[in-house]
Length: 248
Picture 1: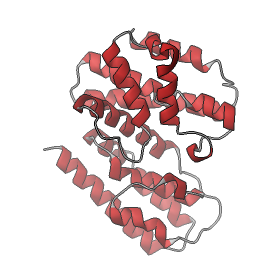
Picture 2 (picture 1 turned 120 degrees about the vertical axis):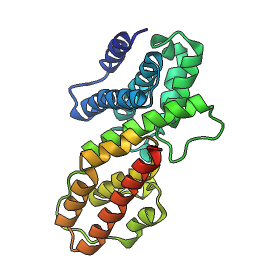
Picture 3 (picture 1 turned 30 degrees about the vertical axis):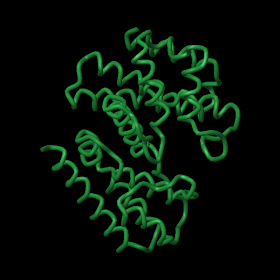
C-alpha cells in the first residue's frame, strides 16, 4: 500500500471518533505533522524511498490509540487511562488491523514495535538495529512536534521548584508522572533534547529557536531569571554539541 492510501485508511479510522471535538482533532493534526517530520528525518539519514514510506507509516500509526483513549477516559494522560504505546500495539495486532496498512509481515512486526516503544521513557531491550532506527525516527518526530506545539502557555507567576532542574543537571528526560503544571510542561518539553537521535532534529530545534522561546516564556512568568538564563545556556550548548557530534 502506498502512503496516500495508508493515510486515507487512517482517516477512515479516525472518522469513527468525534473529530468535531477539538481535543480529538488536535491529535489527528498532530499525527500528520509527525508524518512530515518522520519523512524529513528519514530522508536526511539517506534512507531508501521504500524506507521513507515505512517511516511515514510508523508515524501515521504511532498515536492510533489516542482516539480510543480520549473517547473512553476523556484524557490523554496515560497514568489515568492506559499506556497509549502499549494499547496502540494491541490495536494493531488485534484482528490483523495492521494489515490495512501493509501486507509485508516484516513491516507489520516493525510498525508494532515502533508504536509500542515510541512513548516510552526508555526503549525496550532487544530491538533489532532496524527496529531501533525506525523507533528513534518516530520518537524524534513526535518530540519535535510536541516541543513546537505544546508548553507555550503559562498563566500567572510561578515559583520554581528546584527539583525541576534535576533532569537538566542529569541530562535526561522528565518522568511524566512528575509533571503537574504549566511551567513544568514547558520545562519537560525542553528536556526532550536529551533523548533525540538525529542531526535533523537538533538543527530543527536550533533553527526554530525553540529553546530560547520557551526560556523567554518561563522568564516572563518567574523571578528566577538567572536560573533560566543558565538553563538556556546549557541547553543551547548541548544542542550545538549534538549537532557537531552527529555531523562526524
